[in-house]
Length: 412
Image 1 (spheres, helix red, strand yellow):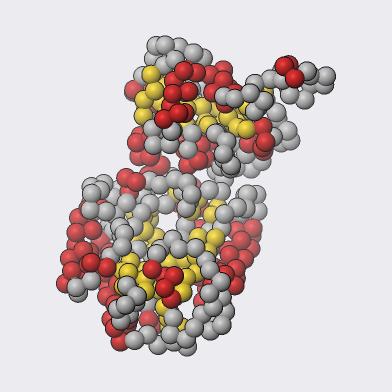
Image 2 (cartoon, one colour; image 1 turned 60 degrees about the horizontal axis):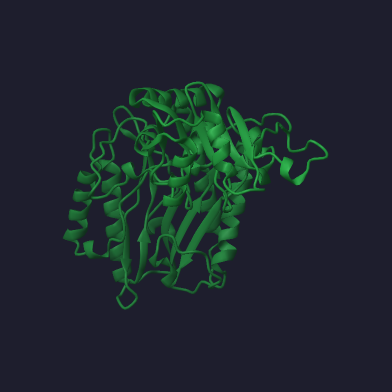
């Protein structure tokens, strides 16, 4: 039944329906890219004896279908079987999910509760035998129970295997990520030029965001534009890596943190740099130079065959030698791909003490040491540099080109 059939009564309304409104839009990648991703997932399904996978996270839905949803309190899914790939979306989005996905789309209505689960069950059927793969790290306890009731089958965790697949980028993904890094550098240059005493954090950030969006429209005219952003922090606000913008106006002597984040079809890249407005104190300069030295050593260590935890151990030693390890505030880097500040994280590729992943060709990872010096100490503030490296067969390619360190980033 089509929901737009005339003369429906209240009780005739469908629980779910299809709406192919308009033509399919160009997706971020060619069809063969999505077929390769689905083939990888289906190989895992066959190995584990799964009759279907119901992927619910933004990053997994986008990775396998090309559709990046906006939840706004509503659930979404990508249902993968041996033969089909179908996104399940809310009626509020109408035909956009179908236009922007690889495969088919099914829309659920909200006239009665849990039509979402009925829509999913209609695609794979109810069976008390077999297993269905889901993402344990994304489903709430309530949703797990409803999914189990709707499908009958035992639910098993597919998230670790999906994450492992996402961690190795295809050549097409790497080209998109490289383009994103170039866009981040352009945003950084715009911000660098706008820095001046009296200007506010938000005003300066706007120049970088606009420059990035203009470049994305030039490079990717068929893409959806959403979620490019800048965190430009000053003074005390540099103490956290993810502190939001404020209206604070810059003062001479401020430590500054430049962070540009272009988003291209759900793919995140970043540039992060420490700067000073005017000459830093001698102690601030020493801390900054120490962080730069650790950053440069980290860039040298990120090579195929390196172990994440071993890289961290060596960099910790360098900070300890300078009596700065106690000021390190988070891990030294993370992966890139389909992720953002509000969705997605390939936890298996973080540079942390408790992560022993071996770097392999096709992985993309950042080097970003950060030191936080508390307000009461000389040199107070947050110091952070951030480059992106693509791991190759023999070495790594640094795709970030905006300069770092005191030679370039002290604004007179």
